[in-house]
Image 1 (cartoon, helix red, strand yellow):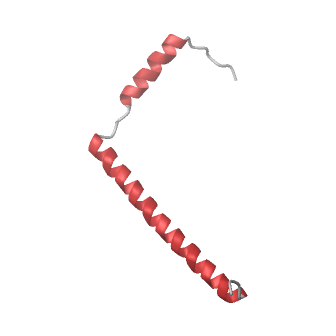
Image 2 (tube, rainbow, N blue to C red; image 1 turned 90 degrees about the horizontal axis):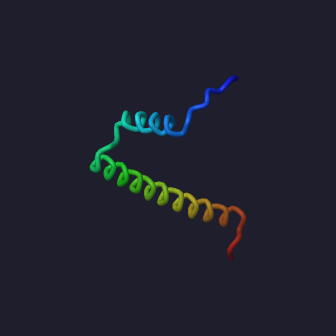
Image 3 (cartoon, rainbow, N blue to C red; image 1 turned 135 degrees about the vertical axis):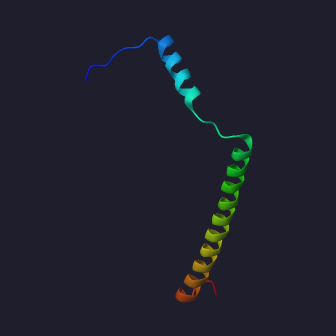
Amino acid sequence: MASKTTNPFTFLQQVRAETAKVTWPSRRETMISTVMVLVFAVIAMIFFFTADIAMGYAIEKILGLGH
């Protein structure tokens, strides 16, 4: 596989041209997405915390540990 070498200046021009084509989210869209991620992270945290406590309790009862 032969590779074509490009000088750094041309490469940076191409990168800039490709970056200009990107559709960037608005500030509002970014804030809404951030809040959604944080909310779902908290929901997942609560779920896994509850599952951990429940499984720990069940294992204590099944194996008779803790007393």
